[in-house]
Length: 137
Image (tube, rainbow, N blue to C red):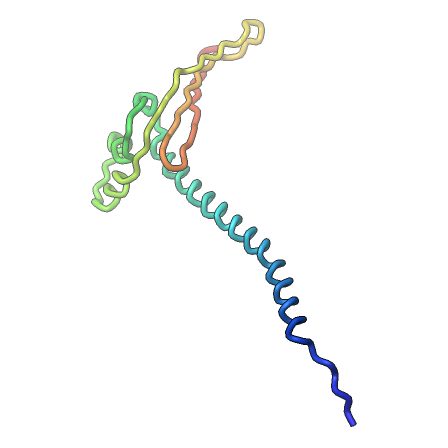
């Protein structure tokens, strides 16, 4: 005759479920945190690509202006397609350019002088870029 094996009681099953649940909670929190960071980095990278539309040679003229990408690019490109034009008009940034910094090396070094302008593009996912201009040796 076969002998019956004792089974788990309902209390033992409930305790094991609680232990497993408590172990899974930190893993889910970590996953959620990583997902939020991935979304932020993705959006930030998209914004960096859009920022490149503003970084032309005339950007230093737009201190404390709110410009759209279309306003910056229309001097250089003729955008015929209406949908492309609307997308460029929807992308706007506040431009702030602090006072330029002049870097003058010591005479014995023989290095060129330089002018550095900081270009701040403010708004969602603000960015800072630098414009360098080298002078004569």
